[in-house]
Length: 60
Image: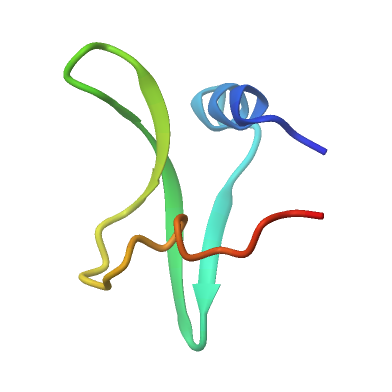
């Protein structure tokens, strides 16, 4: 299982792609930077609320 840091690194290196699929809609996960310089995962803005990543069920 990949950690959040693994995902950040993999996306930045172009080694991995992540996405969220809801029905027919597929939205890419990208790396963003907070105003304090911290990197985090987010989905490309698709106009949906609530946030796609926050809506996912917890992993077992």
